[in-house]
Length: 130
Image (tube, rainbow, N blue to C red; front, top):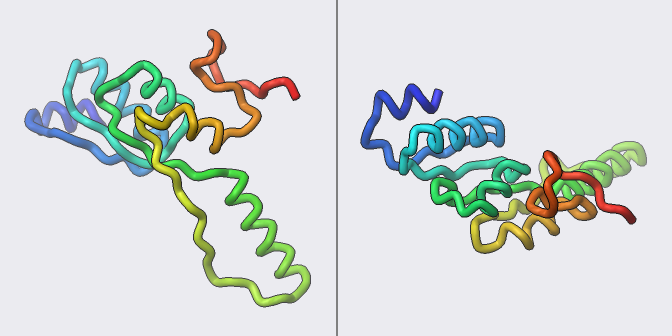
């Protein structure tokens, strides 16, 4: 899709991606085309962190969710439902913004106990020894 966008709109300056896989694909296509299009979006996943670590100038920022916070909130709601206590119709889970200036700190916050993708030569993030 990004290749088609780049061809159809040669003056395109930015793309917002709604999820991580779309962001990965757009980043790959833009880099391969040598384009200066900037990217932002949701999906602070391994490839985004790698792009920040490589100083990829196409990637501006990504929003990330902390799975542990989402999990705790979901279990809390589940426990209330099991106990027949009032259950909220919605709850807010904070989102963090990741960019080139904070990606190392955000990795630790979002993925505790996982080795960062820029540590060593592993192909994917792997659990650290506890």
